[in-house]
Image (cartoon, rainbow over all chains, first blue to last red; front, side, top):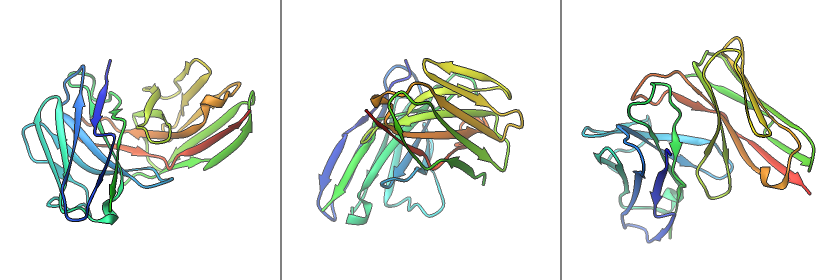
Length: 118
Length: 113
């Protein structure tokens, strides 16, 4: 159980275009999903917290107009990188917490999306 | 915010050797978690610890939640090549709907056959 699917696993796009990344909880409902960014050989950096039916909460320094997050249902959150630039190239990972589990239940992660902006 | 100090940063060991890594924090956590990340993939949960002093095993992996709630260690016994990867510790306060999880910088493990 507790499977989180992320799509696509990799994407290459041109500067100025937008890219959408999907995060789905396959066998459980998640009121909260999180989006992380990971640079090579570094730990996960939290970008934003996505709550179903409400606006996402962004971490300091993360541009909300550039990284658009939508959490339309209990099983799907999307991250759209708008007007992508080469410096946006990174590994993006989502995670979800199982609704109904204890407040301290672990996060389960998707497999990540490698974004390359040319 | 809380800082997690994970050590060592990297380890190079021979197959069959035991491995130990740990995390310390300046603040207490209510949950300690250990994840493994393979190249190009997301972290996978290995062990979750919920009580101070708790010692939990998962196959060749053993982890403990420190008594002070400010530290945790992970041991891997009789390492094998597929243990290669990056191991992250994570501390969690446990406030629902908020991301109160903090990650260590990771321990990169290399196992030589």
